[in-house]
Length: 500
Image 1 (cartoon, rainbow, N blue to C red):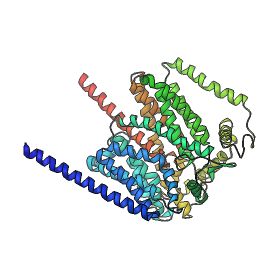
Image 2: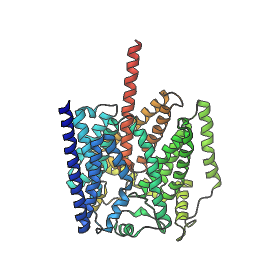
Image 3: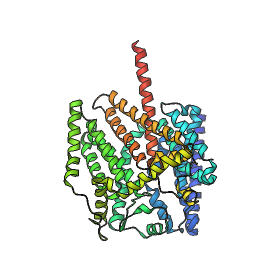
């Protein structure tokens, strides 16, 4: 017994010595990087962030995932803050931080579960097939080079590994993460209000003056706010997800006295979403809230009543509100008023928006000309910014993830993604229907149902599953849904066996 205690004490002593030595080395390296400045300081900062996430992986899978989810909403502002110490550059090593950590997590899962992770749950096999297609498309010579293919992998393939993370995480992990997303949406949005009211700090002005291929950042005579994100679209999508979660928790009677807090958070996020100018996110929010509202009915009569209540305000708005003219509400000294007017124009009369017309023309050309000419894809990176910068692709932005994937990885890949999303939506609906009414489980499935419905909409009128902080959340939720439904099916089969 004494020998075991002595052995344990020696192991702890050695671990403590190693940690102290590592801390001293990091401190010395930090002092040197600070004194050197510039590129070395940036690499030290990014290396420290990466190392901290990998350290969290040593604690648990969920700790590493939480660390990455905490980092992603602030990736944009950290990227722009780099220009305090280094000059502007198109190559950004910060975009490799979470992919590197994600690769380590995936390798860990693969070593633990072997090939079983590729077929463990109902959606694992189709997701694995889609990932295999995307991986092969990295090497498609039509996209202009292997470097372009690897850039496409960062946008399309890397987020897909989060499906396996959601599949392997504890069953209560994603419900906790949903609450964290609401908090992060509120915190990050405060900086967006600052940008809109006060203006961009100097280091962000450097990025604005040098960045390219971001024409939509300007709305008439002002610049959109980005908050802590890399784009206003990302900010809008994050608020949308956070607001749906907050509203779903507010509708849940199981939250007790916290319901008012959740409703307050949802109301605040709705107001903040109007400042982003992202009409697609607003329509996604409307869809999500509608699903939450309708699934709260106890019978078909209640559903009919709620449908009538839900559409009445929209009918009044479209009947009584006159379309805004081109110059209504736009003022050089009123950024908030300009964004509010821009948002209301797109909501009251979306068909008159020039951006919608451009999208329809682009989609028509893709469906009638581009895809029939090459139905098996032109390379995973052919529709990314990497291909645009390499002058391989000079076309207009597609703004449709399904069509982008069809162009990049082929029509079968796009159809497979659509099937995965619809199948996930059906699984959420069945799980909600089979849950005990007004139980915590039923309330959770209501939120999952609303989120999955918005994933379909946002990927049709946008590219949510290639957005830095949004795509991992989407695939994480789909993986969790697939695993949770698999466990429910196993439990039902076990009960049937016991009954027999």
